[in-house]
Image (cartoon, rainbow, N blue to C red; front, side):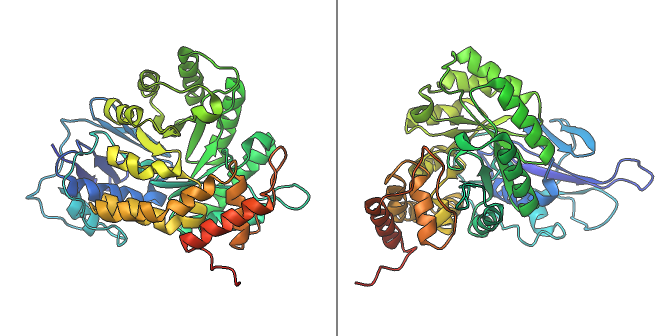
Length: 422
């Protein structure tokens, strides 16, 4: 089985306008075609924005449009005919292998050619919905403790220009526990307005209250975010069935993708693989941010669900890629974005040794994040690099002099900061 695309033109008198349909099949064969398809969706993201790609368990694809119901593509639909010549800008069917379509579609010059060698990939992986490299962006503060939205805009643009496919707003790194609802929602609005579809905006809307999470998710949806990061309910320690109902209730208020945030180190509860399998049955649950170094559990997520697997700890990105993960929701990309993007891209292109080498070169960045509780260290690093992100809100405090020295040393060894003159 293979991955193909069908682009169908319709007669002018047809009330339905011409639209692009992508039909996905297994990605464990003909991965050259699969690679081009992924790049096509990724690079055409502004045009696909607000169009959710859904893949059911029979591997049928639904492609939504902002002003149109789902186009449900079934196995019996007409698909690519390799013998049909491609004719651009004509009112008849343009059919062909996705690798050809990616090269011949108008205005798709940024779409790369098929370069991924054949290798086993999970059969239902559509990573381009939200991106490979997502940065959990810090929240900048002024001296008086209010949010510096202008600095936030500048940092969001910098991250996207430095390799991030999207940003996660008001997550743990963004100091969500100390943000008011109004502040969260304004951050979401500013992020959407700043990036304008050039990268995805994922809103951190999960709390330990289902009703509060529903409220934030509904409001974020109206503001135009691309997806939601929803953490496991913390402190109240619900049973597994409560966790499932929590996510099901949140999912009911939006048709956009949800990333399940499994972080037992902060929440106490680990979402077990059996529960993640149940969560995968919720149509808009599309991914897991796994902040857990249990590779057996990570392998089960990839093998037993259709969910995209994101590393939640930056040092897990490469191991998760080897298991079939799609990338990471990162913190170190604030200071090492191009390197992380290069690592993921090298792996996707089959250059595993280059990806492994970059992973090893990123060791100082991993070490930096261990200097003190996140986001204390990364805010100190950003300040050293000239980003005026300000301090932190209590109970978090700024890095001490000794911690700042360790952060500086990590940045120097990473090559992000010149060594101080002696």
